[in-house]
Length: 413
Image (cartoon, rainbow, N blue to C red; front, side, top):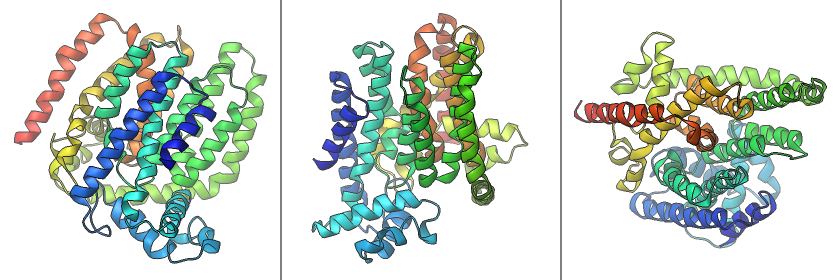
């Protein structure tokens, strides 16, 4: 109830929303994702230090590190053993969040700390749906339309899966979605302050992801300035952003290059299977292939069901390739055809498509790349009614059967 109320507080204070559809969707997915967490916990988590749902970060990184190194320390040392510790240099803010909650749970006498630590994760996932639905309301989408598309996204996308994983991925995704919300939000006075705050927080969650958030911010000020034809409007924001870049660049760029080398080594170690065959293709074909591969996940269709940490509870995720394919086709067409007629929304689409592509280029992992997808899906919802019938028919009659064929091929392969 405590986490639910925090979510309601966020909707009321930050989103300033009293709309029934936003609150209803938040309630619904708080329950749905909460049930997923509970049922996967009952089914999969027998040894909390070893067992996990979908991804082993939940057991071998966040949970074990927090319980072994943070919980035994006193409250006075919480900062020293989390975001100030070299052990958690890769996720300082996330370690503080998990550490704080774990110690609080211990002090409250909770027995199942592992289950308790997943509550705030699915709360953030439900809030992502609330943020998406609220910005669509701002843009005069009907409640019926919002309900239909948010139900599809909430159940069928990777958000459904990641809502139950104890890692920083959902935190990063939440920040990306919030930045997209403020990008689209008209007539908001303190956007620059919000943008910089989101960059800094995301940098503390995953430094590389935070740093590349500068891309949509720069694009925002470029498009708003070009639309007003007042170049001086962008000078101050750009100056402040340049200061941030200059202050952080040495440490972050060196860190980023180091992480890219680590990601590359890990990627190259993924020998065998479809991934290796696609990744081993010559550049840039391999990178284009990885974008397609990530968009087609789960591939094969049973990947998240039969592999380690998998369960039939992830079955709704099998519709994700169809969601991603229609999003990418519609968004791609709209960017090409409508840049001059609706430059603001098109720039927004370009920004989140770039984030998706860049993350995959740096680390082809759906967990990381999905951070940009809720924002991209919001853009899709804003433009889908402007897509001509021939493009829609191409998607339904060509792209979707092709996605089905690819899945069936790899099932038998």
